[in-house]
Image (cartoon, rainbow, N blue to C red):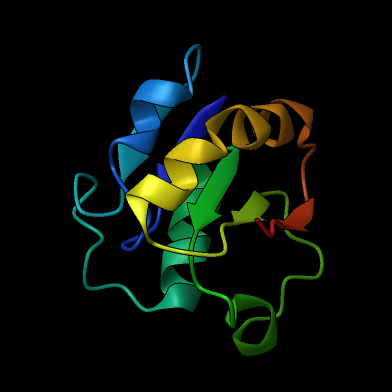
Length: 104
């Protein structure tokens, strides 16, 4: 799967998500895009969007999106690292349009 990391998603997570093609919003030149524009751009080239934005579902209309979205509960790499296998399981199970909020 092609995965896009949002601004707050810790970059070291990419090493844990083996077998997937991963880019960050910054690497794509999308660092200044608002969430709505970022989601629209991501949907054209990516399968999954991983973010730490807990308010995304309230700020954006996610109905009808093909992009799967995974929301992590924190930006803290040490906390995320402890749950890397669970994150990988969730990523592997995502289907187009899914919206999953993880909690640790």
